[in-house]
View 1 (spheres, rainbow, N blue to C red):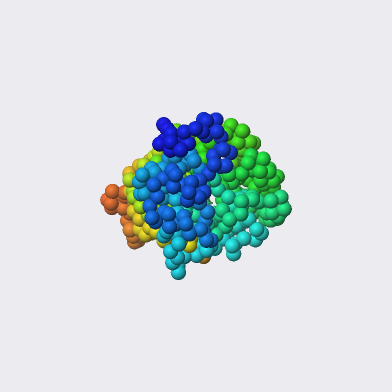
View 2 (cartoon, protein in one colour; view 1 turned 90 degrees about the horizontal axis):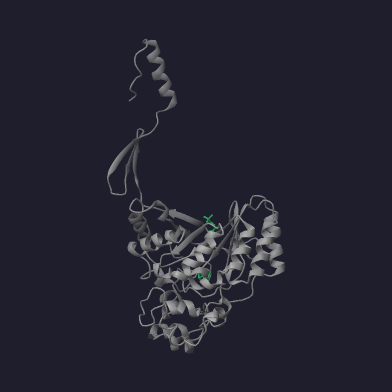
Length: 394
Ligand SMILES: *Cc1c(COP(=O)(O)O)cnc(C)c1O
Ligand code: SF4
């Protein structure tokens, strides 16, 4: 399927260039002049792009831009990557570092919040930038990736802490790096004996599926067990290109998970999310987390009430495949970590009787096991009174 932009402004680009991820990165759309050639911008968008001071840069791969509806300002893909003036409205409740990562950072590039796993920021660059990025304080500012010395310090920290059995390589987008750089990071981490699993967090299959090459996949699979979490927002992000990228990763034995941020007027309804999650299962991606949008500066227009997420889970659990149901989490402002929220199916517990409700709202009772002491007492009495058939315990 050829998009309108592919057949207009990029019509002279040969297929070999278009399919080459390095061409895509080199030709990203980063200025108002370039973008307005491709998209009929609204005043809000123009205003958002013009005010450049101290903001997350704009960068959009030609591939992803060609997926948006250039005539519709409400296009859910468009709103994720084209800045709007609302980005410059700051709210006093917003935070530079919404998840309090800096205070849990023992060495630069490492966030150590949970007992047995760490997050490693391998680069601060991405192939395209999401306007609601939770790490917009650092992302897109510097383009160089973790250097040799920083990587050595991070690995020293991990080596020195035997409890760390899981390293989540994040950023920025680690798959925006070249194969050699990614391999250096993976190899260094694999050299640490107590690191059991590696994970990569990425948005490359959505923004730049061309980046998933046979060479990349062949390299990744040398470092198994390795998991990949892919950031998806909308069912329209899934197309033959994304499917091919996910298929190549899955065929290499890499378990794929998804992470989705709830975004106002983009995906904040049960129909869109359910469609997304079901489409993900078809391309072998197992939904993992549904995130409440963090309090990053200039994201008020993206945030939804907490109840939106809980209602979405209510509409999923029981109504569709259990594998399709992610965990809805709020990353607590200031650094409390991820807190799972779910509809309540538990109504009460009185004298060993749990009252529960199912997904249809019907009420059921589950009797808890009897206290072992009480059970023994009943059985003793039974023996004294001569052998009667097993008692019905009440
Ligand atoms: C999300 C996160 C992790 C990984 O959490 P899981 O629940 O294991 O996926 C690890 N460290 C930090 C700092 C995180 O924010
Ligand atoms: S891909 Fe991730 S790190 Fe990069 S801008 Fe989007 S949310 Fe931020």
